[in-house]
Image (tube, rainbow, N blue to C red; front, side, top):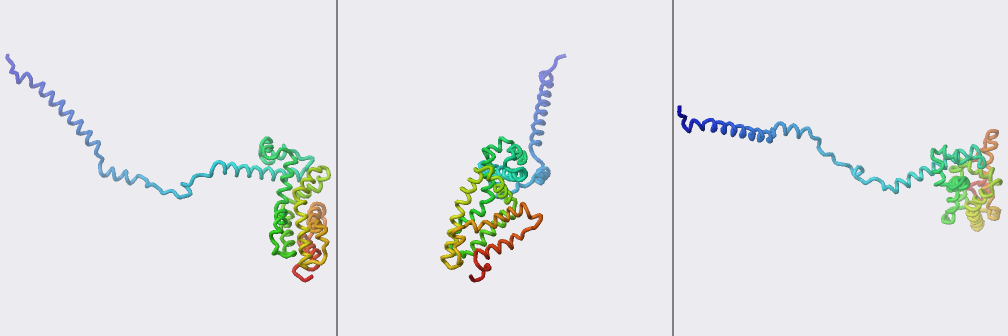
Length: 269
């Protein structure tokens, strides 16, 4: 039976239409998928956290590395000095070992040597730190000519009372008194760094008080050691005799001022 050309090509045309329909369907699906639903967009937007403004402190740059290292280095040095005071006070200068100081400070012995080359240098640093505040107060006396002799003495004694007698720094002076004879270099250091600077200023202070008529005797000008000697005696008494007869340090200092002034503090000559 003969088949017409239209009938023969009908299946081909049908197949093409089906393929085209499938392609159109896929393209439509992609288009729909690319379109976000309004509800979904709103939900996602609601779920996002808004950006939080940062404070100046949060946005500020951190400390420079050099500053952090300097701070850490100073803290480590102070830890070594604190540990050294404990070890020297317990064992004395001769028996103290740098190994024990390093262990007490929580650092390696090699680290300790980065700060102090030997035991003598470490002890000298302790002496300097103990006497620093008093030495500074004395050194500034020439710049305070408006102060009376009584006022200047009161300031010096108050600093000594607060920063040495009232703290563990008094152990450093006690160690120096006990060990200085056996280790002349330690005594020489104290003489050079503290006494040679303080004694002339104290002598000049007493001379000026005589010139102003604030005191009658020039004994303290001739022997400025008289001004500080009773304070050193309180350190010795505290270490040796305080358990038997506690000393009234404040009363002693007031009595000492009275002797130096030739009158009661605040009174007339």
